[in-house]
Length: 66
Image (cartoon, rainbow, N blue to C red):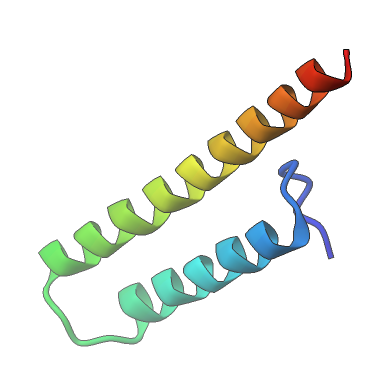
């Protein structure tokens, strides 16, 4: 299973888990809209930062090989 985000398996599992948390928090919980928006922002920022960090690590690894 690969999302083609350029991430390794651990990061993909983290992203999938965060997406599940997001879906359950937004659709199936009885909390206020502001909390739902906050959870959405937090989840997507963590996903974004994880993918950026993965790409930076890959670039550093390629630099070392050259």
